[in-house]
Image (tube, rainbow, N blue to C red; front, top):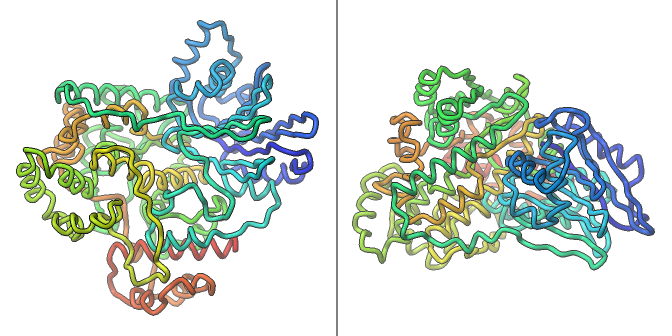
Length: 609
């Protein structure tokens, strides 16, 4: 895990030594172990690559970056988990290695295969690779977008970086706020952030996940290297065989993501995802890890009984991290200042607490279960998507009966506990927002926003899961996880975000994912004999969340002054309606989410507007 930044273009706009030094200083937070840069100039063009390193694999000087050989130059952020297998393959082709790093493996892979190497990688990455022979620059992100890469470009020049601040520091441009993005965020919450590739600054965009951008004398060429839309449902695969495939594929993904020259930490909740990781690591792969959980004061989200049971069964080295009332505004300020992005949800604030403690314990690698819910259908809305997609099938009555018996009593949201209402809603808008708690619709003015209806698959159920994974949920969460973990000098890894695991799960019959009212049914069954039955049999979806009233006194003058301080932003808001919420003794979940989003937007504008 590292930080990267750079420039390619006219010598006129090549950042000077002062700008490079300022950018390098900012990058030390992502990479405290080493910061270096390389400049290559040819005629009227120059290339600048900057790298800051957080050492995880092969923590020696010769593995520092930018890394160069006779064929190319590389600055790389992330991990190539199958680097050992790829290295052995390259050795058979005659390649020799000077380090034990995954960086050198990636360097040789790109030299040998060029952009075709991307299809062979299992990992998370954002990199810039310069090919000396054909004088091309290749920028790329991993399939799921675990590692960020922001771009500012015109027809002839391009700046890029792991962090928007790196671009701002190198270009000397005065950032222009993207108020359209802010409006979408305040109206629809974190699910709007991944609707497109723009950021909260105009003209600074994300490079799309699973793409590469190739820059040559001919100009820009951007392509998607992973076409998962071709996945077909395998109707011939039996459940028992699918279960074994899921188990083995997960074990392989997890085993690769446990490769590290430093101890590993893992988040632990009461759910199947984190418990699958921890039980499998300890019982099946014989790898120990230190575990961390939020000591939640909100009883609605308290999972301590299951967490304590896991701790006892595995004799874990486990820590509860507690939150505090009146969380410091200055801490939110520092995270947003560092990342040039608002924090998207309270969930990420809890993640901040956990990373702070993990950093204090001098841990560098953190494993989490993100993506499992979207791949295996673990949320309550996914039950409704499955119900809707099953209407014309013979087993619909059975599916409906299971939903009505096991799921409906647990859900308060009308879109998720009234099937007829759900069907009526999606006649006009088929996107996932109809099935989730959105913000109260009377708090923001000018609410006309465009929400794409991406068609990844013909099957409604699988298409909605893919929307959650690639546009609405996971994309934004991954950006926040990276921002917050790297703020504390920690690498976050996600064993469920595996190409092989995703493609396998999306090729399964829908009934393998949801059955008898259980979400993630096949994952549960594949973990039998590994994870405790108490966890496998639980249908309750608690969630990793907390009400904002647990953290802030929203009635205080200080809080009100904070969220209403920006006059331009106030023009977007219905101030009287928001004030009514602030004076309530108890606010609901959508209201809590809105106030947190508003607090973060105000803080962002305070820094950058």
